[in-house]
Image 1 (cartoon, rainbow, N blue to C red):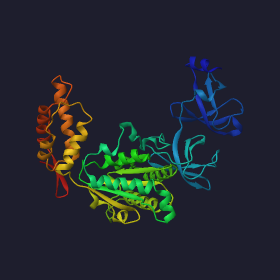
Image 2 (cartoon, one colour; image 1 turned 45 degrees about the vertical axis):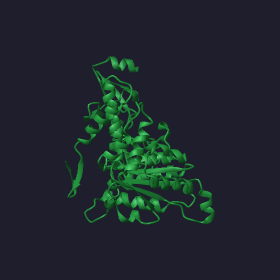
Image 3 (cartoon, helix red, strand yellow; image 1 turned 90 degrees about the horizontal axis):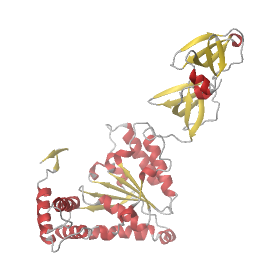
Image 4 (cartoon, rainbow, N blue to C red; image 1 turned 180 degrees about the horizontal axis):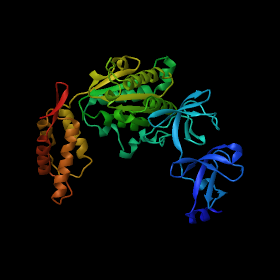
Length: 407
């Protein structure tokens, strides 16, 4: 019968052979609905485990594999046994009996089913459950800062911070040969500290753009997985990929969320991730043109082992902007928008004491909404005044006794 002939009949059933006994004419089989039963034929036949047959009116016909519903599963080989393999599939470890029909190794991601066992190797390394391995080239972490045409001119104020960032590029990346000739150890890591909204992530993107480095952005929570060993494997692959580049920057945003202080109360995942980061930072080659930058607004919560010299060598603090910084931040943003001069930027800078760069940027967002809502195509001083009031009266979150509250 052809596939079309099988499909046109509704008076029979498909059976997949699980095991053949009694000289080949009695066998156990599985039905398409998941059930299984014992079957017998009038005489011995050449059936084997895994064969598919179609039975109707007391007769049977060989059927192609294409008619059987797909029943494969995916798992990771965790241990090779004398009589099979231990395989992690879903949230459980199970044992597949018998020697695999394909060559496998610990850590392989494989396709398997209950009848045929392991069918094929999908990947030599474990694939993560959450994205089924679509990040084989780690593309989800790669950011192209050049899309926004960033430069140090895009970062208003903070002259000391910017000067330190320029030094990092000029010495660590542009002068790598000179450092190597001197025999000096490279700067492995830099940690940005300071209040939220002070431009830590923005400056990291600028450094990547100006230095022409490949930029990997890792948000702390995004790398945490519920699967044992998955987070550490991702970190290893990330560092290995970065080391292949001419120059690269790995930026950990909210690093305190994955590298908190290890205590007796810390969970196993947190301890393993911190240990893996320590190992990777210690494993830098002297000639490596990879810089690790991390950002946090809670440096006191980071494991102290990461902060010692030789790992995160530099700490660059981002305080709340001064009045001069606020004026320059407002100027930088104004230069990228259509405005009606003159604008009271100096007065606005004086009125925003204690504001972060993100709050200053929010003024321009509100001002643009006001102008557009009024049918105008440029921001005027009255728009800024109304925008200032909107941002000023927003609820703000302040930390009190270890928790957040709205004031």
